[in-house]
Length: 36
Image (cartoon, rainbow, N blue to C red; front, side, top):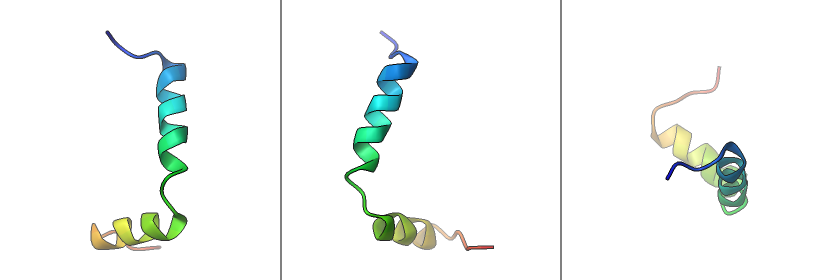
């Protein structure tokens, strides 16, 4: 069964709280993205 929009939003919010800003920065850097 598909999740509701609210369930997806809540899952994303929970997940984002487990990752630090530095971890996010490193992920994008290693994936080849650069700041512009």
